[in-house]
Amino acid sequence: MAAKMLGKEGGSDSRFFTTQKKGEMHELKLELNSTDRTTKVDAVKKVIASMTVGKDVSMLFTDVLNCAQTGNIELKKLVYLYLINYAKSQPELTLLAVNTFVKDASDPNPLIRALAVRTMGCIRVDRITEYLCEPLSRALRDEDPYVRKTAAVCVAKLYDIAPDLVQERGFLEVLHDLISDSNPSVVANGVAALSEIAETSGRDVMKITASVLQKLLAALNECTEWGQVFILDSLAKYSPADGREAEGIIERVTPRLQHANSAVVMSAVKVILSYMDSLGASDAVRNLTRKLAPPLVTLLNSEPEIQYVALRNINLIVQKRPNILENEIKVFFCKYNDPIYVKMEKLEIIIKLVSEKNIDQVLLELKEYATEVDVDFVRKSVSAIGRCAVKLERAAERCIGVLLELIQTKVNYVVQESVIVIKDIFRRYPNRYESIIATLCDNLDTLDEPLAKASMIWIIGEYAERIDNADELLDTFLETFEEEDPAVQLQLLTATVKCFLKNPEDTQDMVQRVLDMATEESDNPDLRDRGFIYWRLLSTDPEAAKMVVLGDKPVIEDDTFRLEPQLLNILIGQIATLSSVYHKPPEAFVVRGPRGTGGAFEEEEEEDE
Image 1 (cartoon, rainbow, N blue to C red):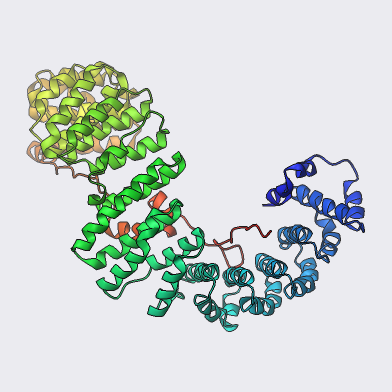
Image 2: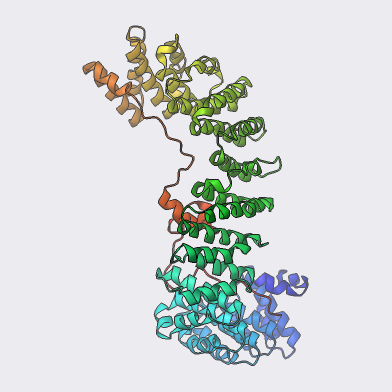
């Protein structure tokens, strides 16, 4: 912010950031006390520049403070910026500035009045707050809307330091009055302040009534784009009395879907999605479903960063209401120049939107992705083919056909990822596609990754009775048992025991060797424990061992829509916030500090000229 302030006059102020010569503090002191206004402004800029690059200029506090006695708004801004920075480390000296703040809060110039109130709100020192109340009270009722909207934000900042004081002085009631203000920007800031206070306190201080609702909807058409975001976010938290009221609000909000600002679009989508449940299964829901698709698709023509945020939000939306974008799967096909993080997110959404109507189209696309150069993207694409098979039973055979074609390419990482997903397909559809095991066994030599090896060993153990040389195949893995990853060792142990239970005559020596290595030579407690359990089962009750080791396993479920409904509803209510990007509720990553350490809300800096 400091660098922004200094660079305001055409970029020439970068000279203030150059290294100063020795004795600069003494020179700055003299310049700050100069009678020439230009020299004084330049001196304060030098101080701000030094402060910005981390130099300690707190010893000039009094000299900089004296510069505040001026009618020049540029100089005042710089001085106030310095005061905000050093208020915490110099609270006693900051009290010296109180008279200047109080005086400026009554200045004829509304910009200076607003600046004084804003700065007092930003100085998070308890002893300043008692002096802030009177100027703030006047500013909230100021004749100039710019001062009123600045004061509204200041109430939220004051609440973070002294919530009891805000309630005692009736500032919350004044904020409610500002929602009826004639100026839409004041209304928006009043809503923003109340929303921030509600979030900080955990109480519903907004209290949207029928009359307040109409005022918010009226202000929505006239305020700035960020004001619209604040109002829309408040509307999203409101619960309509019935379907008719919900429909009326949606009608007023729908034009925002065509807004140029993506934040406004997403906030409007959030309101509509929140209210759709109130409409029931009606024609209105079908009409809204058609209206929501175009703005969401348009967001994918933005810069990659905005695309990514939009895709993370769309990921939630298609889990809640997949029919909104069911006919738009093509827009999620990856472009050659998409960044990897956009491609990965598009793949997730393709899997969620895939259906029996579009599976052939999707498989062609995924097969093409599997020939790309980016290894992570290729792996994700191969995995996506497997997930399509798990999701769509009728298309599973076609998916397996594509996977077998990819295995024939003999590309190492493609083969390994294919083996991993085929294991999942076998678990989803047992005893259905075992004819492809021979092809998998032909590619054993290419497997060198733990997960791929573990998957192949599971397949050999599970279907040992159908593989003529299952014991020989396992034996090749056992040669390097001690060097293998723990996951591979555990699978080898289980697969060998399965093989023994199915064919005890030929595998007795092999199972004895594996149990010895697992229990006597391994230092992995999981492996040792499993080895001992199998050993005792086999030696005391082979039938019980068969029931445990060869028992029917539950079929794996399709995890395409894996978010819990309750969590999904919370995240839908958080669309267009960080929660919708992280896919976590706010409390999972927001840690609120003690009072006075800084709120989440800071008013955006505005051009005052």
